[in-house]
Image (tube, rainbow, N blue to C red; front, top):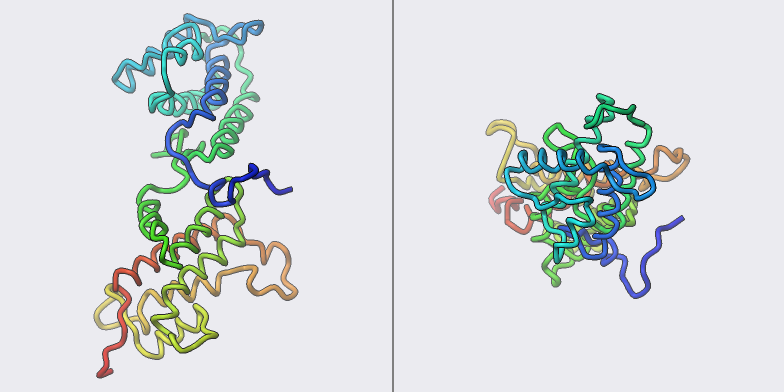
Length: 307
């Protein structure tokens, strides 16, 4: 069943990733933080509030590790947040900290008080709930692994994001418009990996075909790659001076994008053989970002006239 998209909101707007903690997710995040604290510190079931002394110790340890006063202390996270006009970055840091603490508790089966057995079966559902909150709100963050430790991880690497933004921010560039659709289809709230892959190819074709095969109305990315090999196009980087790749490295990536698209071939293939995975779609989108930037920057070299 397809995910709901709010009335009056486009697919692209719904899929856009958001920085920081938006006002519409504050309540959900505070509820999650409170639940995580109760798992770590124990608490009072009738009030759904973590045990105060242990929460105080938890916040103190958090402050020591971030080397600043978080101002999160109080009877619970709701009281701390009531003093804030908005939830700042420290709440993201605290979320990251609690993920790590929960994973430690899951692996070592301890809690701060060491006075009661820990129900580790509740930890994974707690982490899954946070991931749902982040995904549904379009957050740039997800529950993952960063620097070898469990915590918040960017859904998209910031360097790749900056490269993609440079292409997508040009409203007059067809390749940028198509890349934007592809990007949001793979990283957005309602992913469509098949559409993302196919549109990534179209985004590269939009910038490459007019340059490589301007007079071929039926040109495709794979045909353009063949033209580049036949005409001996080049690239600013080659494997070695004596052994150039015919047509340059760029055409290898172009050809790979076409030949690795599972649902392009159809026929009698099984569902597993033609289904586009998340990883395959991401690879196609990242490749499109790279190729479009290379073409825009003049790094894909036309053959010399005397060759």
